[in-house]
Length: 310
Ligand code: SF4
Ligand code: ZN
Image (tube, rainbow, N blue to C red; front, side):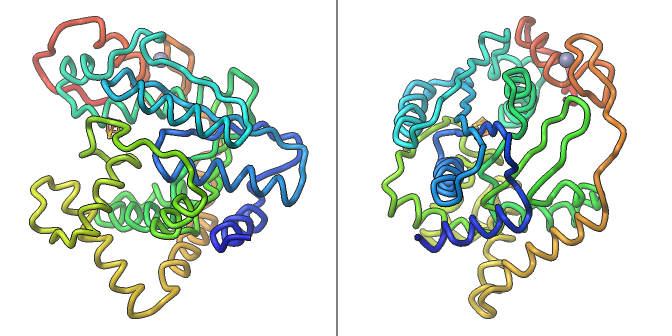
């Protein structure tokens, strides 16, 4: 059994990420992290058989690279011998790039809102009990530090390996919670898992594709300060600090991420009350109309005059 599998299997058991009767939709993007999440979950069920069904779930964002990404995701699902469900944002009346221009928002911000919405709504409507994502230890640590710096302390309660859903919100699980990005890269290479070379033309955002670009920059020893985009500069600076800590004190990142989980656990469930519902689509929303419906409306109209918060 590979080292990463031992680690991930421990995470799945320690935090009870899987239960008999589960139907788990694994969000696969074409990138290495989600490929590793799908593969290790499937391997876990081979080693410890349970009454759990795994389905790969892919959101086609309608970008120029989507065709290549879809082929990779199909190859991955076929190799893992799991069903693959694909949704196209266009079928929901959404054009991510057009909406971003209309709302004067970064494409990644609009894309993130669309993915969060569809990743909850579609699997739930198709009978899923849980959604699994490829978030790993380095993501958790960087986001925790950024949240502390931004005074978003309450977001910590959402940073555990399992976020139990309420109402229409599905439970989210993160099987790679205690695995580092480097460990995942090594595993994906060793297993020869199919990964898209350039899954998205917008690699400056905060998703796994963007992170892979950042990791390339890191491997090439790009100084964090020399990267002009603030978001990337911050990510690189924090990652570089964490990696130096790990070099000096091996194992510290794992201990930190376990500390964050304990903190999240002590803070309790973010809110036991289900959020309000969008007046247009009926999905959970903090405002009267959810971000997805506003993006859908913006996809249909021209360029806006002012930046709109989504
Ligand atoms: Fe979406 Fe990620 Fe591409 Fe940004 S980099 S547009 S968040 S897929
Ligand atoms: Zn809505």
